[in-house]
Length: 71
Image 1 (cartoon, rainbow, N blue to C red):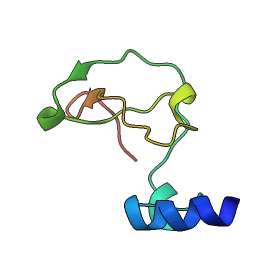
Image 2 (tube, one colour):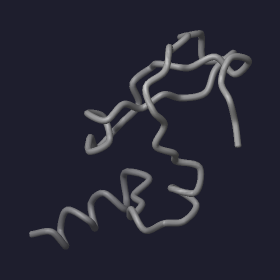
Image 3 (tube, rainbow, N blue to C red):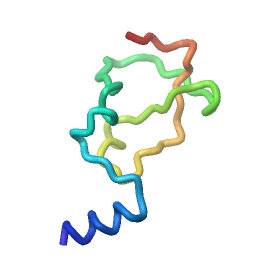
Image 4 (tube, rainbow, N blue to C red):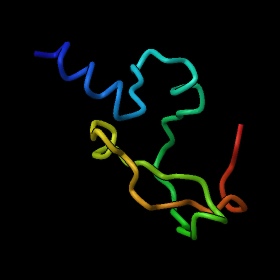
């Protein structure tokens, strides 16, 4: 059954596995912080813990590019 689902998904969706290095290279586990939400044009996608295991984990939430620390 899983093979059938994977075959269907590969034709109709961008299917990636969790060990895909391109997918997970920029994921970090930050501590708690104040979140400044902005529009898509001014932010980076924010995916919370409960969203990680969703098939489509787009939340529509974006954190400010100017107010986040990188690297």
